[in-house]
Image 1 (cartoon, rainbow, N blue to C red):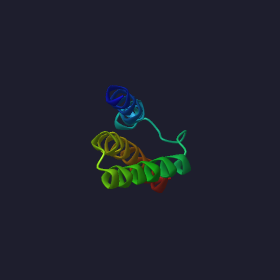
Image 2 (cartoon, rainbow, N blue to C red; image 1 turned 90 degrees about the vertical axis):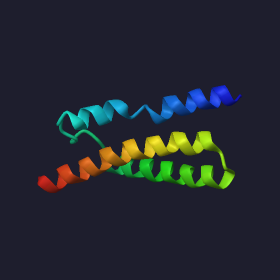
Image 3 (cartoon, rainbow, N blue to C red; image 1 turned 135 degrees about the vertical axis):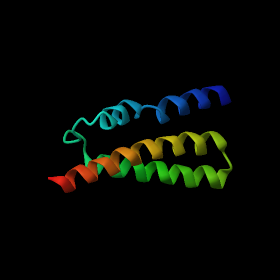
Image 4 (cartoon, rainbow, N blue to C red; image 1 turned 120 degrees about the vertical axis):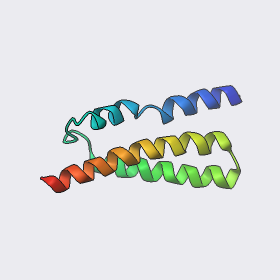
Length: 84
């Protein structure tokens, strides 16, 4: 079961890598939803709190990676919106 959880965690936490690559390459963020990014980042932050409370390193690690990735994209989206 732990292997399944670890694989699932890795896949979901790394799923935002393509968006990060896009943003880092300087492509526009117009087509990304700020509301979705906020909801996803906050949800991941809550999973981090849950992982800490349950002392579950897989939940904690996976959601920390995901929160950093989505948080980065969110910050770039907000920066791009300020420029307009």
